[in-house]
Image (tube, rainbow, N blue to C red; front, side, top):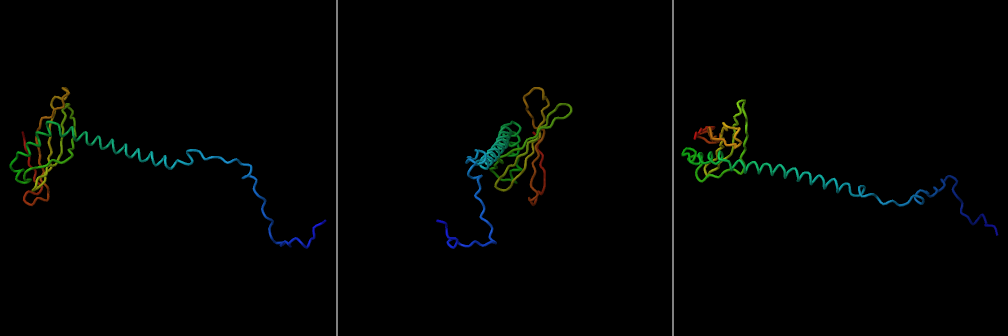
Length: 173
């Protein structure tokens, strides 16, 4: 029996025909993403954090190591003792004095081969704070000992001290 044309609904002639289903989804196999495609953000973040941590560790280790070796030197110990035993400086800082946690050291060599080491550190007492500059010269650099006998020690009083603003006290051994 032939279908009755009145049983089918009338189609709007202005309507577009329905699109054909894509065959790509049917024919293309499902591919699991690679490890890199799913984890690249985590990997990059891990590398960035590790690199930052390693860099800070190297810098911190170098700073601590150089400070410890500077503070163990005879030049530092003698300079600190000279400053602590000076009556004028003790009157300004008060006693007891505390040394700063860091000490900066530089070594310069001149044309004759003499090496001059400068150490900077801070001493703080209950009444005030001073900056100490110790200058020592190794007159026999070829001996390999690296001993720097003290030439002079300069003690800088801060600009904020009313009676001694910016005064520099020079001590000699």
